[in-house]
Image (cartoon, rainbow, N blue to C red):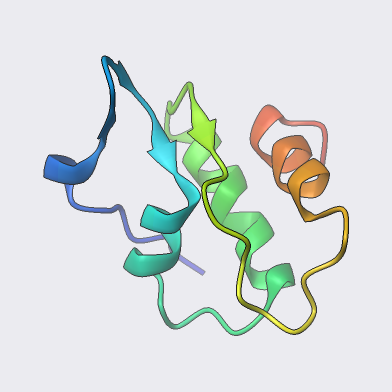
Length: 80
């Protein structure tokens, strides 16, 4: 699965460049599950993003209670 980059013009959060989870979700509306989101978050991290903000809860029925921890682990490289 290939992740679609969000529009660069909405890619800022205050003074620091920070990719928001909502931007990933909007750019990848074909996702159907939380499990499909994990590899995209990993791809974002590998593409060089340094900061990631979880500004919304993923809207999938399989989103676990510890979704923030799981996405942070995926972004920081703790999940392989």
